[in-house]
Image 1 (tube, protein in one colour):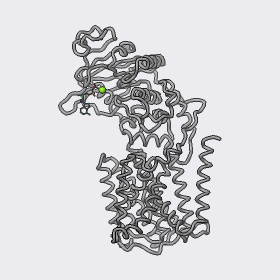
Image 2 (cartoon, rainbow, N blue to C red):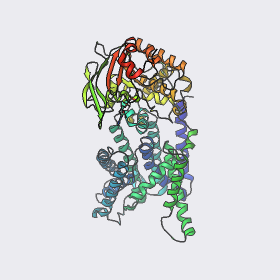
Image 3 (cartoon, rainbow, N blue to C red):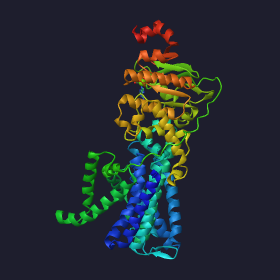
Image 4 (cartoon, rainbow, N blue to C red):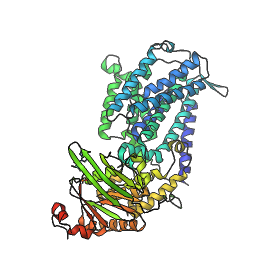
Length: 588
Ligand code: ADP
Ligand code: MG
């Protein structure tokens, strides 16, 4: 049976279990499951936002509030259908989240969570201080949802509606996480600069996830308002936002079902603790929050990202099967312009001139080595060429067009792909997934299409392409192993495979042979020669002189940021300046 059929059967079985549950479970459990479903929707947004993309939001409850209040106002004051309330609520959530996202997502480090706290608190006060919203008392008399003549006016009837939406959201989110977009999110969380080097527009992707999570929260708010038929500001404050984060963390922010697990654990614990704590402590109050806090600290100690999510490691969705052929080849631009032309490039850090007026070209089908002592400016030059750093002076051209003003995610489209001196792989993801990510800019499928299960053929082509590149670097045995399990030298090879998956015309490798054994270095040299033969150029930073001399057509020598020499290996070997400054006569 095919993997997708097994999956469909699994989801069907889950749906059947929930449907039967709605008929046979006692009232108490139905009520409990209603809340778990509502919370799961919000926590699910955080699985994508925080778990996958690394964006911490303390503001999700405010979006729940927008969904709840919009439908409350429209269905009571204006007498409109709750379904119009849903459309309006999601519309307003969309607009508010886009504006807030544009304002806050640019903030880095701790400022982003602080920003989310600010909007959360402001929205909370708005809910509580508008006359038409009933102030702190709230609004009553919200009508039930109606559909096809059915009135969802009991908890049991709402159960079906809540879980239809929740299961649908789980399915869509699972699809997104296991797609090109999901790979981009994990790459962004892991290292935003690397993600951008492979074509991810970080700002746009963050905004997408943020809005998606907000919409799930707004949907939850709509269901909540029509379940309780009453709203007041208290469930939409910062305390509840924190609890949503708890749920995502407890459930293990790496898997969609973690949202349900986390919501269930927190909801059931809260029930239990609210009964038990006053008996133990002898007084009433929201003491369960203390217990939750301790639980989170404990979980973070045990397992940073995964919470109880380790349970879900038992179920790993298999990667799509390969197809007959890989991705269509990237069109090679013809012409005799150099693939890379560095012209008078400088970059300083404070008083230090890391790269000082450096110029050289890399022609088609050439292997050029960039050598120089530690701190000479080699990695800085790579960062300047791939858009991670801005130039202070000079220009960078590729194929006859200027690229130094482009954003990093646009440069890979000009045929440049790179590896890093300090390996940047998603350590917990498989080698295959890491390499598949390399094809990001060659593929199109957006999160929406992925969520709806449209355009899946592209995934099969991507797998085929990635498998081919993994074989090329000799790591086929490790294909499905987490990248972090490989030795460092082999992780460098994974980086090369990932860069090759981008279909580059120029491959920039920063110390690729470090940590490789002798035989592996020889294989790497063979690979580089093959690439050259197929028309791909290589710019290579490497300390192993034997390796460099054996493989390079030309060598550029940097010293204290300045270009000291440029020539064939024979010329460089004889150059007295090079011998004195760098090689110390040690090159044989
Ligand atoms: P190489 O790769 O040749 O060993 P680098 O390009 O990494 O050298 O570094 C060149 C110089 O620039 C070093 O002195 C380094 O300390 C400095 N440098 C590199 N990146 C930064 C940065 N982001 N901020 C400040 N100084 C930097
Ligand atoms: Mg370096």
